[in-house]
Image 1: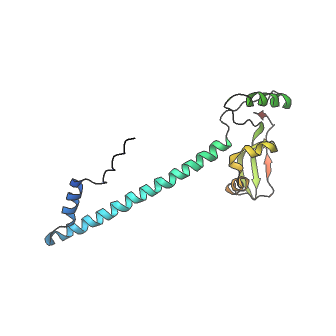
Image 2: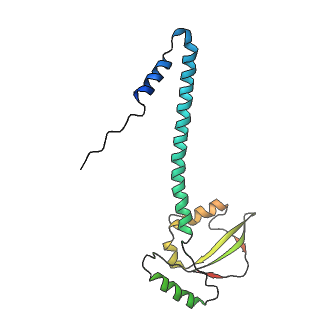
Image 3: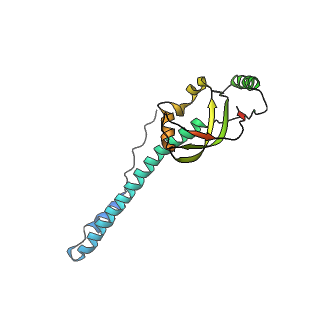
Length: 169
């Protein structure tokens, strides 16, 4: 197995020579040295802030994608014209396909939610109790976190206004 090459220094000899030359200005050019130091410190903090922000946003991106993809199916089928038994049969058939990790039939509707004097639109899903364990975004108190983000309390009184119900798979 070959060894990895040594990591390169962050600045080459030329860059260090030029920086040192301008940072140690003579007494008659002391103002230029002060300006150089202030500029260097300003650039240092700006780059540090950029790196820190990108690191935080990268972690936030991973968390956001997990939350979004964890709650939204990658593939779904609408079975509004089928009975509950037929929808269950379709779900069973789909679960037998290689590569399918889970199948969870649910009913989804868009509603107007009112609680604590606040009104907001929401998608409500009626999910079987045994399928809740397969939802990664509901682990560790996810229900309370979702309610808190919407400004609701758990348990609490929530009123929904919805159109007629349809089924999805």
